[in-house]
Length: 453
Image 1 (spheres, rainbow, N blue to C red):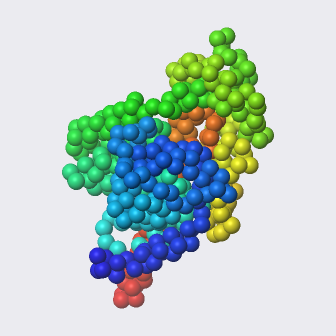
Image 2 (image 1 turned 30 degrees about the vertical axis):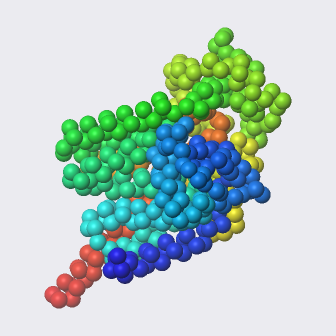
Image 3 (image 1 turned 180 degrees about the horizontal axis):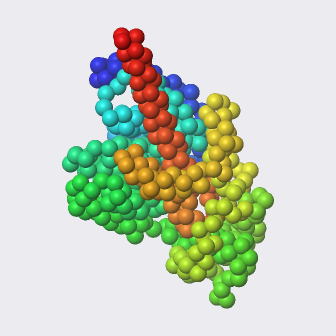
């Protein structure tokens, strides 16, 4: 271990500096933590507002069974195991300490990806410097805040880089590792359940060795993702209502389409708690409360799918419509455009988020589409395959997120898409740096040969 740290002292120092300097950045909880901490804590509605932020909470004296989770998620089981281990030392769960581990793991996973892409799994000062520069976009306050939360999406920042690293090699060990991380992502949150399908397409197009084994494992991972959705309860009815009345029907109304006769028209654009969609503010409060949700509780995901099937072009061009534009960006908000979720952004990490949003706000989605199409046209190496996986997940995340809950909390739901775009930048910079380094080496060798002649 000491020898490993000596060889990577620059990386170790970088990780320490990042963790120390981002300790004050965090993301507000909007009531979602309950689905992740119920079996080991009774404090369900933790830090709902900045002024009431709690960085640690008391755990149960006796943990409930992990089977008590209402939301089946690999994130919840990782959190449960972490809480169980720490319970031997303290009855307090510290989000601050947990976030240090998450940030360190993200940076380590990114470094593993760099070493895999370099062709030789060995460290050098050049690789360490390239890593530090390439990782800057991923150090944005949006990602640091996510890692300082208990939101399920945070583990995508750790799992996805390692998953991409596993596809570089075609060994049995890497195939089983790929299965593990694919299954972990598929069960991370319902919006990622289809990740094994993307991997199946990747294997068929880019990596056909041991194809039967790979496809069999991906089908198993897909089954895990579907089972996680089927056995998750407590959010299904809410999501179905939002998918239809705050998504499909609302997008149709904003596009000028006529809604079907059996739709509860006054409830279009009203969420389950009576907040009404507003194109200028994001949402405005009403006194409707849950009336619309109760009156329209028979709304189903299939209703939204039927609507999109009858308006396929409208669905495809949704990312480019005016009503969607405010939901792009990484300075995450909850419903109301002014209700920002990230706290303490007056620092260099907040500046990274600000710069990225200024330059890339309207570029992320179309750029991911271009990269996805390019990776399908240029299929010469594993790099194209890596970009295919990342961009396919990124592009599909918009449509899956919108299908899941429509406009409601769409900005934060697009964090998966934003993470994919950051990884595209990371992989792209690494390859660019190695191309430049190779050209410089060739020129030096040409120059030395010329002098010898």
